[in-house]
Image (tube, rainbow, N blue to C red; front, side):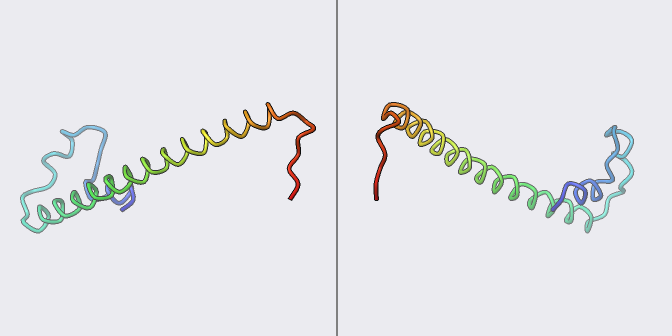
Length: 83
């Protein structure tokens, strides 16, 4: 669900009080809001998980980058690998 879709569901305005009473009670709307809220929570959890995995991958790559820089810097220009 996109941010725009979420905003459309809530009919969001800058101030909560300006729309807090705009929706009368409706069982279907309550169920829809609760369902959309669950979807948002799931998406946040998924995105958080992906973010943590990306953070770990970036950290690993930075460590490898640092090691490669250290090794290539200390090996000197005459030391080349031949395969």
